[in-house]
Length: 450
Image (cartoon, rainbow, N blue to C red):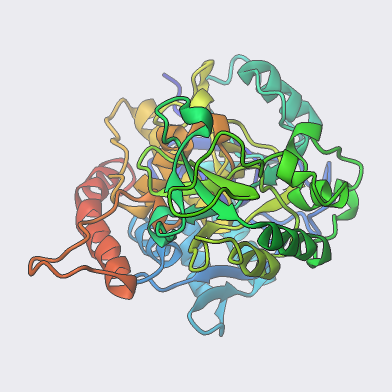
């Protein structure tokens, strides 16, 4: 088997993959199309350019899933986290960096490594057949040629359209004194959805909030990308008529509220992961600003205290349906010589992209060296994120996701004394359990990339 691996894309995911491969002693060719071909979002030709924000979000490893992911990546030898730490700037509890210094440092480290060759060129379409180990880390603005290649290979039909994302809440934050489980007309198991009822006055107040709410404007390069008519933003539907939603995704037919009178409208939530810890608001894809979403959606009975695992969004994106097309080591089932990494897998965010890049690099290195590389435990942040993009999410409703504790198997609800563990104490349980579960996997990493 070849000991040379090709990595396509010099963003955070591709840079991290290349670093892990080289650490394992493999020859790496890193292909980056900039500046030969530019994108509408990037401003430089630097590797690992942060184009949207200089913050890698919370660095609190005890109480925040992102901070825990930072910690795990550091322990696994992440180049991205090492360079972020070396170029951090004051930002309270967040890990923020000098963007230019960070990018320059990542590029310098990769270019200085004797096993890494940087080639400035576009890989148009799928990689040549004689590249028998490839990591595709082309990001959310994947070139048209590569997107077409992936579409043809995976059968996915939505790679180049807007990614319409519905908000997701944690099940444990829903008030079941108001909400109830039931499917319309009791189809399926009869309880496949959580239902939140609205009276006539509550419904029209909700519609008024949607129409008046502050919305995100599209970037110039997004404006010509069409909506899916069957996946319109909820506020666009509301603007077509105040009763549109009551006869659409919020219709109350086939449902009986056990807690009160027949509702005028109903918001349904559908299970979003195999663990049953996350539920998405059905038909609620939106371009409302995040603060507006939290305010307006918490006006829905049963969601007053909703904890959002992610808020909705709408932007041009390129990603595959990971649970459907990827195996457990990030290989395309249709063509296993190709691995995907970063946002093209359906993860969301800089940190998550780099984390999936780290895992893809380690998996590819182990395969090339003929060694075993188990996935990290799903009790860890790395493992929970990997599980989500390779099978933990529901393929039918798959959408990009940031790391959050809702992706982890839940810890016991009560401590050894029988007391219910909630809030910050519960988050600390996730983190302490993850640290213990990470240790055997780190030993495996040391055998691949010491």
